[in-house]
Amino acid sequence: MHTLGHFDLHQQTAQENLATCFSLFMYLPHLHELNLYNDNKLLVFPIKDLTETNPVYIFMNKDNAYVEGTDGLKNLLKNEVENYV
Image 1: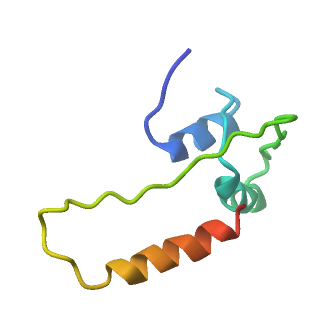
Image 2: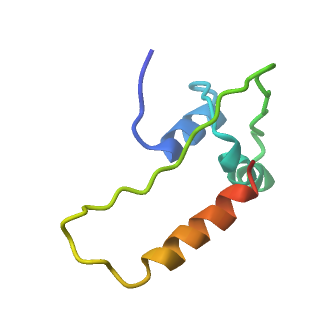
């Protein structure tokens, strides 16, 4: 068993038949794009009855001044994540 820190390495090792990997649903469009340009296609198998979710949190230091654009970032993330729910 080997652990890789960067998800792109997980995908690349799986595509080279060196490993298998788990992927979050939100990465599936990227996996599809990889398959368009590679003869060694990655196969995706959903996990039956998986009901767990992967929450996303934004952490901010309460002692720092409010940064302009924070609300925009929150809205952008919220809209993007809604596509995967």
